[in-house]
Image 1: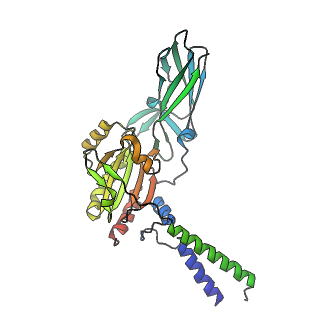
Image 2: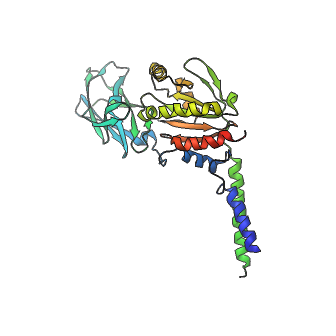
Length: 167
Length: 169
């Protein structure tokens, strides 16, 4: 008798927790069903995606007095598009950009866009600067965009500004 | 076999906690979506006016390969289920080029409304959409019930739509 009561109590509890709900028949908005529906529409298991700043990191350092090295670091399982990388100087005046040298990337055959040059590993970008003798500091603006390999999703372009003091 | 008092107490506690957790979970409904969308052709669409329908909102970008790849399936799904109560709104991300969005919508003759999220308010309001594609489903009562990051499994979506659109409001 008690066993029977325990079983029915468990069934009630399980129902309340969403364990016994049919997967798609109900339009309840309980979080349990929400998760189940979310899984239903995904082709792949939704891994935790990194925050943009963790997926793609930027380090900037001087190499000599007139050259900057900007290192873009995609996390493991992420890549950057070469043609989406841009460097500019905010309010250029005493400092302007001369050249930006991006090394060759890895060719990715995109099913929609065709061949795209990408970086799956950290990449060092050399930026030469034109500077007037009076120049002291400036702000480097960087824009870059990348994607997650496994899920195929692409991030919004990331914009960063880095305040630098000339050596 | 006799059941001890301690076992009975543990079972009752488990049941109580489970029932309380279930009741709490059922009470936590996501806020009803009340957004208004302005399409690239200037049409205003208020989500409140779409109550009783299932609304699929797809955040995409013309620079997003898998967004482009899933578009034909999205079009086919819309054509199949729109007469039964499905609405689709395709929201292009704020960083997209509005002219490219317009051009793509025209070339592909997208049959559903296309919105350019100028300023990014929609991406922010839908929980900070940071990647594409992201697809939301809003049920007949206006509740946002699903978020899918990445390409949609259309077979599973159709299974859901078959059931949900057949159900009474």
